[in-house]
Image (tube, rainbow, N blue to C red; front, side):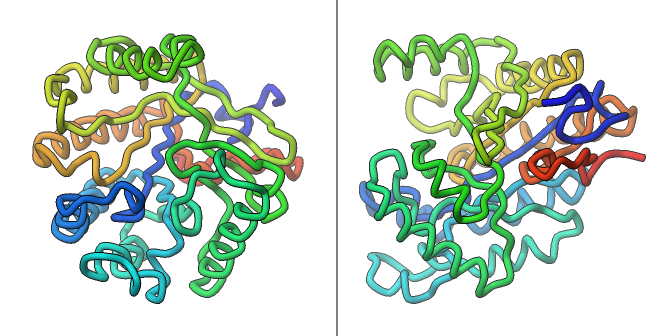
Length: 311
């Protein structure tokens, strides 16, 4: 990466904020589905998405919405349990298009299968389905979020025309994850429960692709996670943005709408607080707003400013 950075020359010293959202509804848990999963996908997801879009409009902050392509394919919903609205959601994508802020639509696979566990032919089939759906609806397919963060078959992503993908969270807990899955999960929970500053990240070239590692997941508040205080989440969000500003790096926040299923108002209030903070930093010229696709410019030898920077 050259000294100017992937998002712009004169903007290189600024910190950057990138927000990516995994939109899957019931597809997220298609293989472990419960009646409660279906109920929440049908009754909670749309009001939450509407609230999220309203917050992004209010603070004029764009996000990359990585969508499961099957959400736009009515035939894929017909053989699934529960109501079709758990699996088919063109209304949510339409709401995104009518938002005041111009969001990026990215890919989250065809039917939310784990690329890291599939053969090349299985991945190819899923990608071809996703490509066909995106093309049929005139949607871009530049950025990709791996279902369940199961990274694999980068060569096939590049052949499909994708240019960026979200990497894994970077932090002190990463070394524990290399020891064992259980140790990694425990370390990750401890990290989220304590006011430890998330990492500032930088884009990484991976062959023909650009990886954008992630800094922090905004956790849901169900199960053991409910003990994590909103004040701790806010502290981490503030410190993550501040660290990116000081380092001239990226604070990459991500979540699913389902992370707002429990204690919805409390979760939305935390996000609203953070977006207001970020909007203030943008207005002061300290932070630049970048969607995932904004980092793809260097692949073509371009020096591209992020689309949503302040004047």
